[in-house]
Length: 172
Image (tube, rainbow, N blue to C red; front, side, top):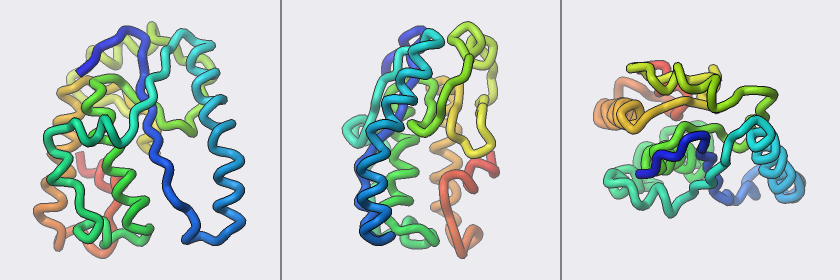
């Protein structure tokens, strides 16, 4: 687990969006690299160092095997199972990094590491976005979040017909 002052993790997994049709797939491929550049540039401009994490980081998390089953609870989502799996895997990757996070579609318009310091000192998780797209979390906070996901999966019948990580976060 890494702690780097001023570092922020962002997750990326190259998902096949062909289930939405060819146009979206081509559009996604054209836009994703530019989106990633804008994300990194915007955070760097305000003093952050962006650390890209992916499935390798997720696989290094001790609970990876527990969460890694496309036919399991991911199939309960209204979204394709591979997409839903990626949404949960990002949390394992972020936890493995030990860094606060910002999803790659977040553009920073002025939030600095100094602005983040009070949030990182908090005892409860600090999510800066209602969509859970940015969080100033510590390793302890990630444990809380992942434990809440495990609870939901263990009591999955109480949470049907749809599960996703954003909805699950409302239960913290």
